[in-house]
Image 1 (cartoon, rainbow, N blue to C red):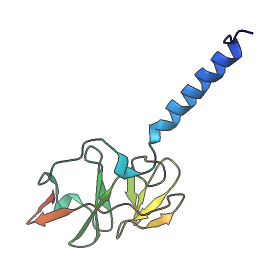
Image 2 (spheres, rainbow, N blue to C red):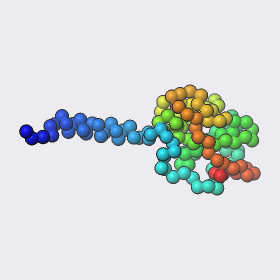
Image 3 (cartoon, one colour):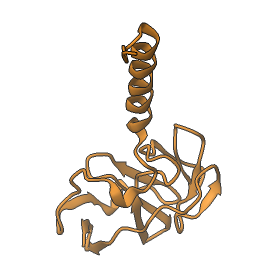
Image 4 (cartoon, rainbow, N blue to C red):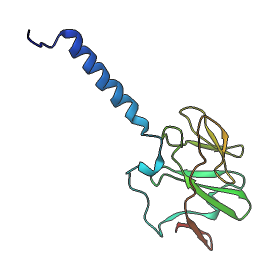
Length: 136
């Protein structure tokens, strides 16, 4: 008996490969495994006037969100959602929002305000010197 590939086997194998490739777009959901380069330490991200009080700004290239929950209080978080690794796309009404599945995180501490994200956004280190906000 010979072991021949049938058309069905080839189609199933091709479909499975396509499915896996499509799912990998969002990553594993663990932002620590993200191998994309981040901004270098000391790089200026913004000036303090660029970050609205009660809101924030997303820096897509650096994969960081900087917020100002209260006047003069600046926080920074990863911009990678802890659900499936999408990049957050909006800061509004006191939350950092992910477009993929609706997760929302607090601008104050990155805590999950609405799921399905299982964990808060990890904090990032920044320094504020004068009017300059830099990566620490």
